[in-house]
Each structure stands twice: as structure tokens, then as C-alpha cells.
Image (cartoon, rainbow, N blue to C red):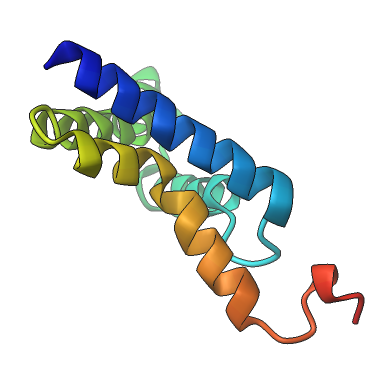
Length: 109
């Protein structure tokens, strides 16, 4: 079972690398930019000039994505194909959006 999961992770990573090499970074909906926007909104909503507020912000901004990643890993523990799709999923979605967007940077338009 463990070999299948390692193979699924490697397959997902390989698919993601290939998609990234072919398509590059998305012009819209970049995951890092999205995280930055969400963290900015969170900071604006809970900001206070105290260490406690800073610690609360850091715990939420880091804890929520980590908890989601752990949950996804646990949910796909015995499902190698789901794990591969999860790892490569953002790249597949990126490819879908890129192909569906006329006049994208790769089109030369």
C-alpha cells in the first residue's frame, strides 16, 4: 500500500511539474496571491497592536492551511488516485482556465 501512495505522490508531482512547465503561472487566481489577499483581509479584521493579536493572526493564517492540507492527506490516505489528483489538481485546474481563456499570454495575443 505504501508503494502505491509514493507512486501516486510522485505521479501527481510529475503531472504538476509538466503542467507548470507547459502553462506557467496563471495570470488570474494565483494561489499564492489568493493566500496573500486572504491573509490581508484576516489581518484587517483582527488587527490589534498586541502580541496576543499577532499570535492569533499567525495561528489562523498558518494553522488553517496546514489543517486543510493534513485533512486532505488523511482523506486520501487509502486512495492513491485521489492523492495523485489532489497533488496535481491545482495544475489541472490551472490548465483548464488557461485553455479556456482567449487571448492568454501563451496565445501570443
